[in-house]
Length: 83
Image (tube, rainbow, N blue to C red; front, top):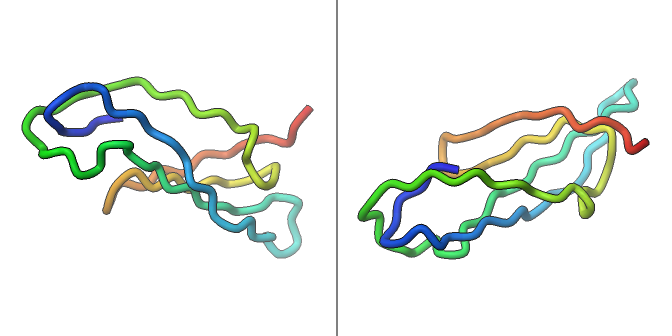
């Protein structure tokens, strides 16, 4: 994650959206909003942190997941079916 703030102690979590079926496919689509624990922290200095998210609470699989980290920062990843 790249973010700005007064300190490097920000933590991040996911807020999952509703799972959507894709017509004619076993693949689903779901969006997840990446939430910053200190979203109101003043943007004084840039920071970079590697963040890992658990998929335990993911509502459906396999899925095309759209991660929204901030306005205009959208990433799409494919998550396979659980083994």
